[in-house]
Image 1 (cartoon, rainbow, N blue to C red):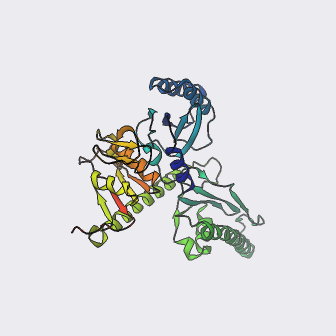
Image 2: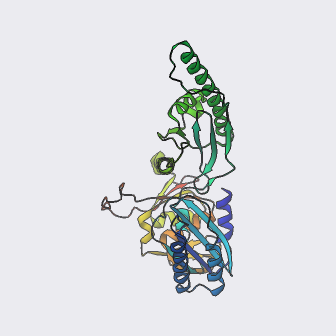
Image 3: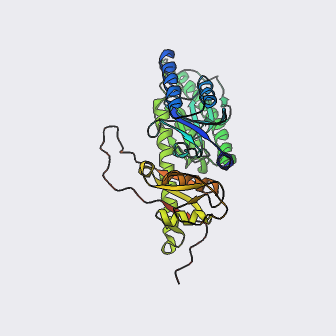
Length: 378
């Protein structure tokens, strides 16, 4: 929420603005990364960005955030200063985009999962665990919590007999004690921060013991990942995929919830279509705006204003507000939503598999959940 309020303060200010939506730093050789940075700088200059903004971008690119690859990055410049620099875990959504003008493009920024969505990641082993509170945009929100359990468990020896059984029971008791400590940490994070899900990876027996030790509220949030990420040479791909899949599922469920609420009571708290949603935004009546990702490429435009009501169609009364520019309809609606404290959700157009064909369908109209019902027609 704080990030969205900060974006609203930025959008209420005057431009001109320059922005870039690009791939984040990768794990390619340094010479490849530097070539990409030069390409980004050249394309940024070609759109008409000021020399000061180009230099600000170039300097920012040399600072490569430590975020897993693939990732995406959004930078917004004004008067040679970077006023917004956001990194996102996961691949870029859509093509790289560059822009310069009186109104910045913000949909590339908003298309990523809500930066305020929290989740917990647990990488556990029989000797302890690392527990992290993360967010969709930034991943680690604070330093990881290392749970260093007891290490006096003994390996399962092959001697057989009574001693072998005793050693096994002792080791199991120690492992259970360690996972109880991990569960205490996870339960505390769930109570204090209300994460949307808890991803658990690691040793299979440790995961089982942890599942048994968690409170019901935490257990209901668990996404179990069958990979031992704490083993030597372990690959974290499965864990990252599980996190991304869970975030996508949460985003889809959030959109469905908004549309269901908008459709309730014969749609009295819903608005659909550019005209109806624009009117609702002009009244600051929108609680949540849902945009089809395909609307991003529409040729239709609306007028961005420098003050309330922030957006207008041709011929609309705008009071004392002045027109800044005609901009794509999706950008105009999203900007007005942010400026009126409404949430913005983008319904992505994922075919489900890299080689799957794109579904043939029309672009869905923008839809909105309203803060108060529309009056019935007289």
